[in-house]
Length: 511
Image 1 (cartoon, one colour):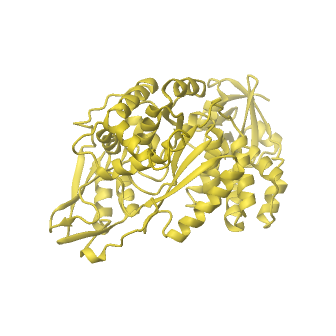
Image 2: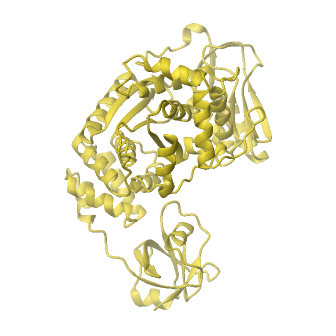
Image 3: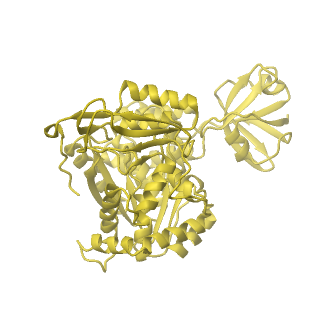
């Protein structure tokens, strides 16, 4: 019994959802149940979707099938087109999922089957959540983490550059600002190393690398164009969502992030699967530590490094891990436009370029350059500095921006959100600590990353001496209401601690 397709304007975030009216003849005849999986077919194409049952004809009529925004786009036919709907076969990997829920250790084949079903959207959100929680509570051993990572990297498209080495850099996240990738890529690409950087958008942070790059250029590069762009310019800074690399990872993230789950095993699988699928042979991994970072102590960082090294070795990936200072934001801006301003100031050797962002980027780029067998260990930093100071990195970044699709950007007068306020020091003293999580939340409340010009402009760092009433940071908000939310949050806790110099907790990192 064919139904007429109806587009339901609901964003269901990486879950295909279908809508049937309770009085639909097909609904009653087939015995569909809410939240069950159905198969929708039209024009030789099919998608799987979770079924929602509605009682309002304003949403979907008796002879219609509604699809959420993502599902409608994926099916690829126009509204009113005839579609057929049937019960979907249960995923073949469900028995393996049940064994994992029961606490059993799964095989390599089990993980491959589960990840295949997840990538094909055969799992409902309930089943996805069950898998994520079973892996979280069951504490995957390192062999299982390798099986999961390998399965995620194998399912989906893979890139092969037919050269060696292919380098990449990744940070485990949690530090506002920290847009080192947008500086490292043009430096190593200007040297001649191949660096296909596919980056993520923000989910819970004020900006991801893709969000910041999108201020300067288009980041949605089709898969078929990505290869030519990278081979021509030796690098890119593109959004990974359009490349279909490790697609199961994006699906799993859709349930991990709302649950605030970022276990070591799932972090390793997420990062390494993407890099292997992107064709990387060498990876530089940045693990920041700090009281308000994802990793809080040096012993924890070393354990995580060993886990990354084990799995990367099994996957054939050369890995160099650096442990860095994550006690405060890197750079001066938090939010897409402010971070883009910082990046371009460093690339142009601007007198107001943030030195912490410059130095960290040079050190990371130097380590990456040492993947080149012709560069001796310890020489990378000097070569990276010469590439940046000479303007070659800027030229390379401008070429990548033009190739991806340049957008207008005025470095001296960036377009910032119009509603602003300053947070002032409540007393004199020295900045002894900065809460990364609090500042990231304030920037989010101000509208970042959806509003590109929203965010937090830092005016003081740890170790700076301030007087009472001196501005610590300036908040830019897109709307008056968002300004109000950010202001209330900053009044409850500014995120800054003011004290005496001996109260600063210096981190001894291994850079």
